Amino acid sequence: MATKSGSSRIMDQDARRVLDSAARQRRARKALESLEKDNNHEDPHADLVMSKKALSLFQEDSPEKRPKRKTRTTEYYKQRFRKNLDQLLDEEAGYDDDYIGYLAAQVPSSSVPPRSLCAVCGFPSGYTCVTCGTKYCTIRCLDTHQETRCLKWTA
Image (cartoon, rainbow, N blue to C red; front, side, top):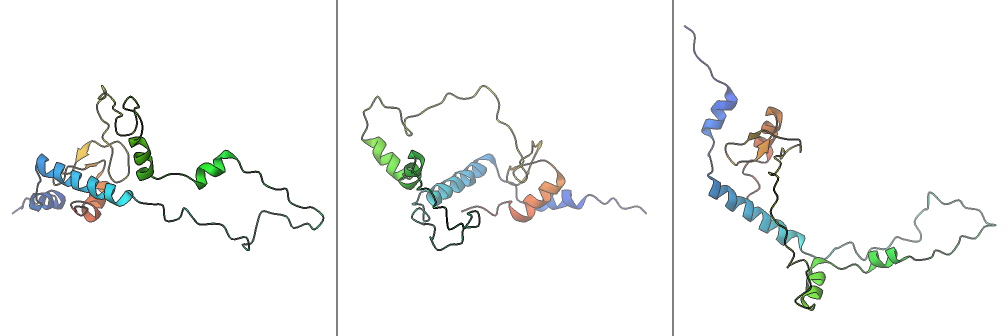
């Protein structure tokens, strides 16, 4: 007597919880809020200076030649005194109303449909995870997604 055995991947999907579009949007909004909260800070490595005692591997040691004095370009000062997002937004608040800055910038909606890219590898995808709605391209990427990402990033 032959028994009908289905794919373990399909049976595993039936056991998973399926989210509706509103729950998916709430999870995506929470993830974006946590990323924005995490990214909005001072650069902790901005004040690091290279040690003068460090070994220079690319400089020839010859006693008869003195090294030229380096001239500092405007790029040096841009990097040294660069501003973070909070400072730029505070500076923008002092401008006139006719100034179009970061907060006032608007772009019309695109006439081209959005691309669907695999969340695991970045290639074009044609499939969607039934549980969370994330795009994937192959079964291998689906397995990676389900093992490491699916509903694990929620805040």
